[in-house]
Image 1 (spheres, rainbow, N blue to C red):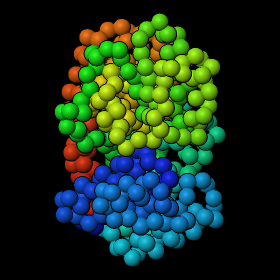
Image 2 (cartoon, helix red, strand yellow; image 1 turned 90 degrees about the vertical axis):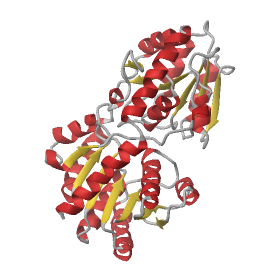
Image 3 (cartoon, rainbow, N blue to C red; image 1 turned 45 degrees about the vertical axis):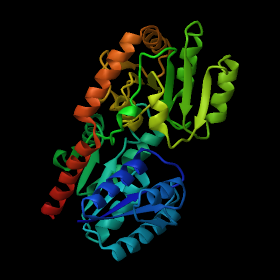
Length: 367
């Protein structure tokens, strides 16, 4: 099989770009041909080179909505696909999904779109949601299949009548495993918490800081792992809350697995999501997870078993759950072990890869 992957951003590594890199590498390892088309050059293309994944940079494919540039991006993508002549096109992220579906359909190439969380999900700004629904209703008929990373996202797609049920399939995210020496010891004292997230909407670092500000009497430290435009505001908030000695800003890192192995708990506070890969990384490490109950998060985190779910923006509920974890090493260990078992059963990379490959093959047979 010859497959082309299309993703928008090269300037910041995110869930969609990591997914594309790992899928392309796995396809190559199994004897298929794979090429990634990506907008521009940056950390994403560096990661592709490091993984030995061939790619082609598209100059016109950019994240902001720019009608003229977007039209030119369709023609540029179409030219690249005509040269590659793939059997299948797999598109990822909203802009690449729209551009790629138009280009793929115009060339008669079987095309899929993977939604890594809808822009119109519950909690997203209403104005943005209305535009996203309209854009997706126009583009959805151009895809042979739509893959959603959570059942919640599939239900949203059906609610807004984007496509018939048989053309929308859920394939949960999956993560490659790590060696045993990168497993955490959740019961270790004093507990260190970690949050892996860009300082960018929809993440809510402020909610976590407000909750922890009420737990100064307990022993804890916090690592923020990630970069983004709102980091300076978070730094100022840490100082104003008197938490500067407890919170570290580690920036964008390539050793996230090693950092999680040093933690005793994982937190993700956010306003909306698809199915966050960072939560799966934490479960893989054997960490208990406290996360906002949004999107498909509850499909990964079993409340009261592998961690705790808290309401979007609910500072008091978050503080209470964190206090329980911080005070009870045995609870942290029990939840972390349950999370690791859940990862092994439901969220391995091999499971995701095989289910995605089955969708590829089904589309090609249909054509």
